Image (cartoon, rainbow, N blue to C red):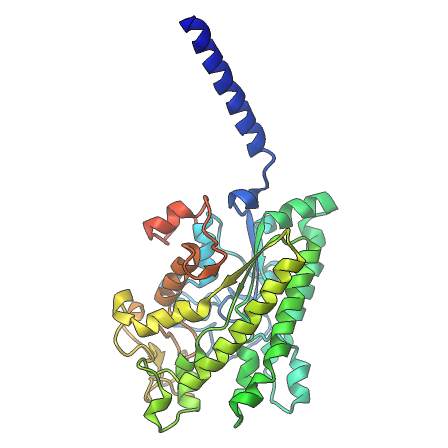
Length: 398
């Protein structure tokens, strides 16, 4: 009897093992949290090199030293001293760093497996088209003509080379993580360049949010299943804006030196974006739409800098040319008169417009461990990397 029971037990175990093996071959990778690729859209917070194919010069110029000095030891087109949030996410998902679309298209990137992802983001890009700002009478920068709509058009042009049938597209896109943004911050830079009340500024928000959610809907209709959409940063803490729209009343600033009314505005944008994302989730119940709370992830660095290894003056710029925040428009990073600090890891702001690799590392950790993602992005495939706190994966492709 003992022998028979033992055989029965082993038989049951074998059946369960067979069932588990069968299930592992049928559950989509995204259900298990094992994304096989990343497709990304956005602006300078996400661009890994598209800018250098469309613009000969920028101020600041992310294509010149000391950009890239911390990690890559050379400029790569990333507007930071090192890796971006996108890079940390790719490393943690055990994927190579995502290559820029225009680099692939122009043959600059060799032997790249596009099924591992493509980055369509362009530094300086807007959610709304450049023509919108032209009609408002603003002087429009070149990057605004590579808006979210243009990036989406690139993705659609690229799609036939990625997959050649509805079934193959369903597999590739269904197992991918789509990151749409951060985008929208540059849109508000145009009206902020002129005297404008908070109420006037708020009139732009529905149009910017609509452009973002329209792109999300189109990506879902093309086959995207998992999408992460970051909100705007607390740009009331941005040294370039703090320099340009400084006020004398100290009560207008919070304890970290950030402009309260400006952060109130970007919080307003983020809340409207979250409302619309919730509506999209109801409309597309088969998808997973994740809101990435960049606003509070960055605000924690400003409010408790020493806890994260930063100096007390968190609105001071690492690479700059003087002034109250070490940000000077006549001597911006990478140009004459600007000097880079000895240790960027002690700074939140890299050049007055963009953050340091150290700041992006902390933001990424908060996103990946679920603290600043709604619903959480934490998965079985990322948890082992997140809990270790090690974001220096050997799988990074420099």
